[in-house]
Each structure stands twice: as C-alpha cells, then as structure tokens.
Length: 488
Ligand SMILES: Cc1cc2nc3c(=O)[nH]c(=O)nc-3n(C[C@H](O)[C@H](O)[C@H](O)COP(=O)(O)OP(=O)(O)OC[C@H]3O[C@@H](n4cnc5c(N)ncnc54)[C@H](O)[C@@H]3O)c2cc1C
Image 1: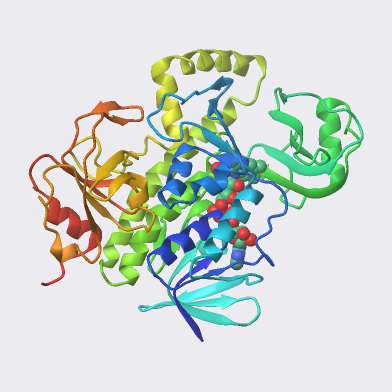
Image 2 (image 1 turned 90 degrees about the horizontal axis):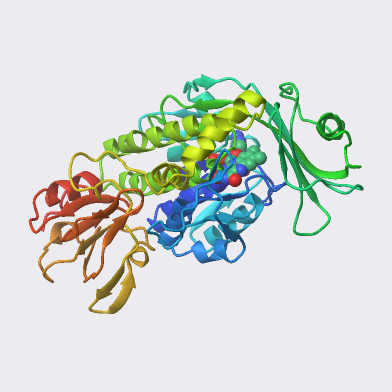
C-alpha cells in the first residue's frame, strides 16, 4: 500500500495551499482530488482580501496573482465601500481575480514543489488507528497516511465520515449562478429588491455572461437547469435576455454552519469542509487559505517529530473563532442584501455608520483579515497579531520581513544589540536575524504601538513572543511553538 506522511482530500484552494505549506516544510504530502485535472468549471469566487495577499506574499508568490487580477477597494458593508487605502500594509486593497484563475496559478506553483497530486482520485472513506489512517479511494485502491486532512469542500465526506457535527443555520435563500451567452442587451449594475441581489456581467472574453439571480423560493438541492435560470430571470427582469449555451449553472444558499471540532485524532478539517456561509463579503476562500497556513507548519512539526501532537490543538483554538466571526459577519451582510423598505431603512443607517472613520477601520479590519488576533495571552499588542512587512537593514543588505518567511521557517528577529541572542538549541529550526528598523510600528485598526527590541515570528507570520530589552519568556515561547531544545 502507498504511504505518505499526510494525505489531503480535495485539491481546491485550501488543499493546494496546505500541500504547499507541508512541502515547504519537507513533509511527504499527497493531494487526492476527484476532478480529472486542476481545471475548475465556472469562475466561482471573485477574489480575496488583503491578508490573503499578504499570506501569499509571505511565500513569495503574491505577484503571480497580482499580475492577473485587478486591485480594488472591494471590502463592502451594505452600500458602503470600506476604503482601506490608509491601512499600514503593502497591499491596502482587495484583489479581483476569478477562482478558476486562482486555482490555475496555485496548481502551477505546487507543481514546482515536491507535492504529489492525484487527479481523478475520489476519497470514499477512511479508518484511523493509533499510528495512521487508511484512506479508501474510488477505484478500490487505498493508501495510508499518518494524518488525513479534509479539504473537500462544504459537503465534506471526511467531516461526515469522522462523525463531526456541523451545527448552524439551515438555508433560507438560494441563488442561481451561471455562465451563459445572451442575445439581448444587459441591464447595468447590480439590482437589489425584497428577494435579494441580482446581476449580469459580461466577462473578459466579451461573450460569456456571468449571471447571479436570487430565487423567489429556496431552490431544491438538485442540480439547476437552464430553464430554472430562465424562469428566475423572467421573474426579476421580465426577460431571460435570450440565455443559451451554458457552460456552468450552479446554486448556492445562505446555509451557515461550522464544524464543532476541527480534529478527531489523526483527521483534520480545513476550508469549506469546516465552515460554510453565503458568499456575501467574499471571505470563504480567504478563510480556507489562512486555515491552511495556520495548520501547515504545525502539522509539519508534529509529523517531523519536533513538536508534540498537542500543538495541533492550537489550530482549532486559533482558527475556530476566526471563522465563527466571519460567519456572523456574512449573516449580517446577507440580511442587508434584501431591500424591502424596512431593510432599506436599516441599510441606510448601517451605511452612514460604516462611512465614519472608526467603524470603517473596524469593519475593514474584519473583512480584510488584517485584524486577526490569536489569543496568545497578555502582553504587547503585537503578540498573536500579524507581523508587519517592515523594511529591514541587515548585514547582508536591505530585506523585507516577508522575504524571511518565504521558506515557511520561523524567525527570531533581533532589532536590538547585534549578537544579543543565542538560540543554539533551536538553531536547526529557527532563523536568527540581526537587523535594524527605523520607523513607526503601525498595526491595522490599532494604530502605532511601542517598538519591540525583538520578535519571534511563526511561519504563518504571526508574532509568538515580543522582546522588551529582556529575554524573559523566550525559551518557553520557542519550546511551545517549535518544540523542546535540542541537546547540545
Ligand atoms: C458564487 C460564489 C462566490 C464566491 N465568492 C467568493 C469570493 O469572492 N471570495 C472568497 O474568498 N470566497 C468566495 N466564495 C467561496 C469560495 O469559493 C470557497 O470558500 C472556496 O472554494 C473554498 O475552498 P476549499 O478548497 O475549502 O473548497 P472547494 O473549493 O470546495 O474545494 C474542494 C475540493 O475537494 C474536491 N473533493 C470533494 N470531495 C472529494 C472527495 N471525496 N475526494 C477527493 N476530492 C474531493 C472537490 O472536487 C474540490 O476540488 C464564493 C463561493 C461562491 C459559490
């Protein structure tokens, strides 16, 4: 039987990002994807927000996405654009880029890494024991892995087979989404009415039209047809615009659910398999990619034997609250999309508030993911927050902080007296960089914070320890996050 350290069910954005993270940490990883190749039929998500661009920048691949997309102020609440161009980040914007482009770029990236990706390979079940997981595949094959991660989307077989509960809210509203051709002139802009949101948009090829229409009644769980789409359009617009030649018709709902736990023994969940919600606000793909970046290095250290299995518990501790908050936020966004006169009154009030400076920053912080704060205890405001991408000066010349993270290895950044740290017992795992930084330390939403003399940065870019001229707590932080010291 084929064996791998980690098997990932599902090669969507979450599965591919996780595979990249594991491969960078030199873990033997196999992706099992039921599609015949990486091609995604239909455009699906329309992009991602600032923190996801940063996360890709931390791995040195953000430019590949930026080159194909359009940067824009696309974080919104109700009718208000939450302009974040004054946020202290190199990427104070969102990126408009279709999911099929995102997946093409990601699959080209992971093809450069030692990732084994098996297309046309559906996971049909698994059985776990004390030392690993036997994964059953559709063609009567199987493989064994030390860990199995379900990145297999909202209908996740892995989540169901693991017996993980998926509490939340049943759907109340459905939308049809499609790519078709039309014969009539299209209306401009997005329409809101008492049912929800509707729009038709001609895509880059000048021929294909992307249609999103809210159905009058909650649609069935069966696959929608061109006729369903035609009827839904006629109800809203009085015409179906002569739709024909569909390449993709799908239905999504406002079902909102989150896995009760993200791990059962050697089986974990990430991305849509762990949380589903209405796409209002455009946060789903970002959540999945960031789940992967949180889990990847932790799982790698457990598999490589440098950290105990308990490190995996911090994955749920940190990521479950982030998704719970995003779910709450998308439910609020969804409610504001229905525009009868009463809701319109609420939209007007919310929009006025959201255009004020303080609420704008708070809300943009949530949607962009730049305000994420993992609870790592009391201390300096940087603790548990993303490390800013500062311009450093080192003995080898100028360097950006994110460049230090390209290899997904932790960094102890010493901004005080050069040579002031000795981390020999962790030197095989942690980079020690002496550097200078002249300038303010500014965090999104919080503003300016006191300059630290050193910071310990995890591979996912979050700060695990902050120095204040003493080394107090550093050995504990190194042990907690990167394992016990190696005997010298
Ligand atoms: C209309 C729409 C618009 C959206 N817009 C945005 C947006 O603008 N921004 C944003 O961030 N998010 C958006 N989203 C959400 C986003 O598309 C998802 O959150 C994202 O695709 C989740 O990625 P994932 O990898 O976790 O899951 P998926 O993309 O669902 O990938 C799961 C993969 O697993 C495979 N698979 C499933 N079961 C098995 C199995 N048993 N064995 C092997 N393989 C399997 C599937 O083939 C698939 O490739 C939108 C969603 C919709 C529907």
